[in-house]
Image (cartoon, rainbow, N blue to C red; front, side, top):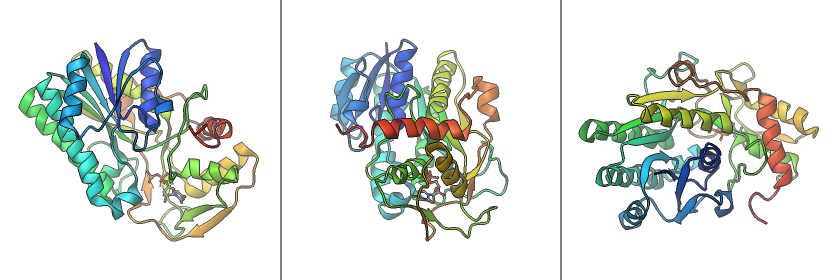
Length: 329
Ligand code: UDP
């Protein structure tokens, strides 16, 4: 029996594949390589290049492989882009998930661990944010992820599947052995952008807005090491396989850092005086997102171990220094 990783060539998905293989699982990967990288896929995984929106393609993989559970990472995930191209997000994210659920029904696959986001919460008055908080997305990306969660939960009621939805706060860093890391084109996430500026690959980091209602006026986010994040997925899978009921968990470090603090820490880690400029707010950005991850700790037994922002940035820096052009040789 195999675990199917949708989006297993992408940043978060590729780390999941490595950690599943580390624990001895058989892994099947589906990815359309729109944003993922063939070289990010572990050589032991069975790789199928194709689109989750294609029923014919998906059926061919489910017929060939013996799938016992799904980890679903295949989605577009950029807040800024989602505000400019909303329909791209509804098509790939929402419709793509519809096809995934159809396949689960057709092939009797009962368990799915779903990659969701803190963007489902939007702007919240009570911080750290708990899972019971109202879901009020401020951007299309968050809206599509919330819709995907709802689709899965309605299907759970209709046909006996169980799911865990993991709402990520800001995932960052790279596998600590340096084998794989983050490579988006174009890169828009704060930590890799700052490190690209440190490498001289871009002239400066632009801070998007410094008039937010936060201590230093820049947005505050909760950064989580990608390896800790994947540990929670493996625990979620084990939880479902041992009969756990469908559930939703936040994944963050419960600590917030402002954009300015991230840049200052990156200066310390790299020893480089990274050039900074100030720009307008980015559309759709809430001012503060900090998780309460107590529920994941108590129910799943999750115990993140790479929580220091120094370590998060230095593992990312290790990857960027050794792969200045990402997966491109
Ligand atoms: N950010 C920034 N400059 C950049 C990229 C990001 O100031 O070049 C800010 C962004 O506005 C947000 C925070 O950094 O407040 C984290 O953004 P990112 O895109 O990494 O993650 P998101 O919170 O959107 O998931």
